Image (cartoon, rainbow over all chains, first blue to last red; front, side, top):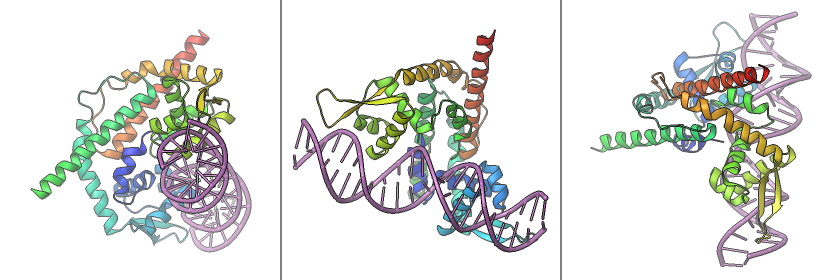
Length: 138
Length: 138
DNA sequence: TATTGTTATACTCTATAACTATA
DNA sequence: TATAGTTATAGAGTATAACAATA
């Protein structure tokens, strides 16, 4: 759709999609969660969460653990891999997100504006990643 | 995904989705276009454009017209309805898009930032639409 | 040969509704 | 009865690959 292009390219590096990343993000903030609470947080149907979690289990980002007191529920939990990817993602984006809104260009239209914001966001993200790589290799 | 919720709600009023609106937007800017050029502008596959145009033809926003000189190609063209919806969309958003970036809050993280920007964008859009309705009924 | 758009196929994200197991 | 998560079904958006018509 509109703006996923650069975004998806970045996430694909980790084998992630936008929706799955959003779920991981919520999980990273909230800790182990039931699918119901994820559905509420993401504002999607519980059926949808089933599918997202299926995908994330397959790709090793989360596991389904039994809920300690409610045998109907499962606790979706980040794996070590999931934790480390989310930690890196947070680290990478915490800096440039603020820079994004310095000296913003003027926007005149809806769609163009949206694209421009996200363009900027992901160009900064890319620049940020490049910097980090340089630091590592330095 | 991430941020389509409020957006989709607004567009659904017109029987549109995000992707179809993006195509209409490009068409509104560029005038009648081949599907190839739309695919390039939207950065999606031509197969995808076929599907988007199919949907927009069904719902009366565009027509497929023969290309005057190349019989392989079609010219996707806005209907009167398509023109009027895009004109209104441009009118409604031209004002608030600038307001969006006055006094922006600080963003600390990637996902939260994205959500917050778009939250703000669509709240302003909603407020804008309410204002217009008030003007009409006044 | 190359290009335009289609059909064939497949995957992700999304939804509602019916169902199972549990509370 | 109500809730958590599943299966069943459906539709939109996306992709690649094979193909037909035309350039």
